[in-house]
Amino acid sequence: MNEEAVRFGTSNSLIGILASVPEIVNQHASTAVILLNAGIVHRVGAGRVYVKLARALAAAGFITLRFDFSGIGDSPARHDGLSFPKSAVAEAQDAMEFLFRNKGVRRFILLGGCSGARIAFDTACCDDARVIGALLINFPSMDEGDARQNADSAQRSAFFYYRRFAVFNFRSWQRLLTGRANYQQLMRTLWFGIKQTLAEDEEETSSLYQEFRCALTRVVNRCVRVSFICSEGDHRLDELRAAGGKLLKKFCEECRLTVDVVKDSDHTFSSLADQKRLIQIVLMRAHGIAPKLTQLPISDTTAAPSVFQHQYQS
Amino acid sequence: MPVNRQSTTLPVYFGVPGKQLFGCYHEPQSTTIRSTAVVICQPMGHEYIYCHRALRQLATKLCEVGFPVLRFDFYGCGDSAGDGDEGTVTQWLEDVSVAAAEVKSRAGVAQICLIGLRLGGALAFMAAAQRDDIAGLVLWDPVVLGTAYLSELLQLQSEALKQRRKSNRNTAVAEIVGFGLPGGLREEVERLDLYSVSPNVHARMLTLHTNDTVDCVLARHLIAHAAKVEDQHIPAPKIWQPTVDGNLLVPNQPLRSIVAWTSGAHS
Image (cartoon, rainbow over all chains, first blue to last red; front, side, top):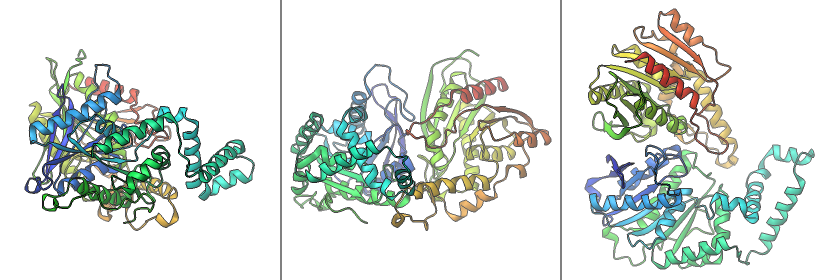
């Protein structure tokens, strides 16, 4: 395994680590995987999971680059006043340019967790033919600000919390039975949950969701292989299902995108077992997007079944 | 010395092949460069992740006042070679030496100031005791007793397990919130006791603690050993612990204090 510290970008200030195994680096027809910061955690990732992912992908024959966006980790802040969503997309493109100029790479898979998944998706939306796949881990269908403004989104998060955690929590029951719970809020959330369950086939029509569906359609129609990877214990899974609606299911059934659910894991994959399961899925999906040259005759390489309805189990 | 806002951060791999360490070398751009270089020893595991932002800021501020600074990841940590379960205290002490040699060669200086936070502080202290090129030592909330540190870590892991369904509480794997803790390392950490280490009496030392409940026992112990110690208590958040909103904290006061002390103590 070769790991090399690099600087790139318009002012040569973005800091990252290039990883590859020279003997097998061309197995995927020179495809690189670029890992984009999850939130404000630097390129090592929570639980060092980005390092593990990058090394596992490099060992599988991909060139990988994990780097810090400006103002995160080791990369200094920009001073051009560009908003983060715009500068991050520009810097993801800088990373592709750097890999093209230095390693001759022409095909890219963008991988990101949380806000990094959003940046990966937004970069893939830029009609950039170099992007052939996106591995989106705990993808936020709405940005945090929009989610706070959206009443349904807030109710969905609360319902997710009650269903997933509070119902199994002794203290929550104690609060409920001793008059210390917010009953009004509880009733509102439960009513929301019941409505959602009864109206399962109804499509949510919020403009933010419509925007997402349009963008998703555009990306999928350009044959970018999109893989959503979600922690079972993260409310963004419910949000993704609502935002994607019937379109998400349709694309899954047509094997044009995949949704994998990592059973029992939390948002940051904070146990070694969760990390192992995540790495297995990422490797499987990366191989699906950019198969080894010896496997190229296979016509549809993303045909590994999506686990949208069944949960992934290792 | 006037503050010079310019500095260059150079990401580098150094050390022996197979055990290469990653570091960021902060090279001062001012005309007056200090004759002592700084090596920053970061904490381990999840604490490393939470403290990274603050320690980067510290390196930048030290560089702005003329110190060449190397901030590095120990073996098996961060971007350095090795898996998370391959690190040992013995290896990490060797890493401090490798980092010290690297910064001396890059900066062309003979003297080092080690700055360590949490377990990084304990390692800096132990490494300094074996070296004669250490001019200064800053111990920021250092781990003093391995047993107390381990019990904190195990408490954190136990809280994390409570958030999981019983069926998914794998207690057989030795880990602390996603970072491996193999038996050998656990034993080494358990044995860690800074009171049993003879301090480097030639180095000037700053012990900085941010916790109200911790007294300055370590400083008193060091003074009893004729070490040149200044003890500072600066109330500040425990930046190595997770925050409710996921933010990474950069405590202004401790950073300012470390920069001021280091600047005053070294030419």
